[in-house]
Length: 104
Image 1 (tube, rainbow, N blue to C red):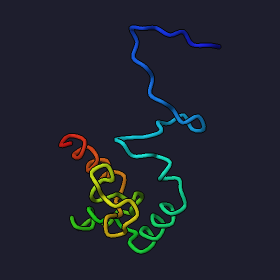
Image 2 (image 1 turned 90 degrees about the vertical axis):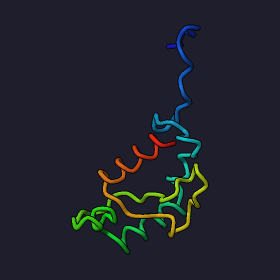
Image 3 (image 1 turned 135 degrees about the horizontal axis):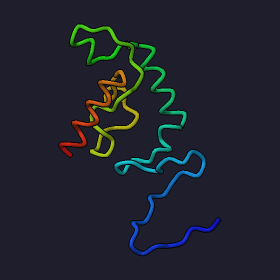
Image 4 (image 1 turned 90 degrees about the horizontal axis):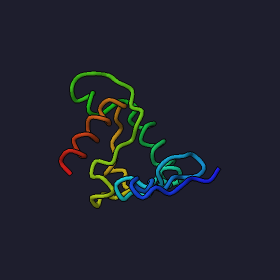
């Protein structure tokens, strides 16, 4: 079924055909997160520091499920530098991402 172009509707964002997800977010190529160098670094960080760094600082023991770039890649943070990465739980990662989105 062919879609009809409607001039009053905004153009859809490009989608990754394999997963139906955006190809980039905030200027960062999302394919980066599926590549072996990132997956290896992520696994290494989670293995060496399995608890959420933010929660641990607040005296809570929460398993880390995400590896976050301390300085976002889109702001010049090094993508594969372990010193620019920290393990976070989903909750802390969502809060940090919301703060970054709010403050640019």
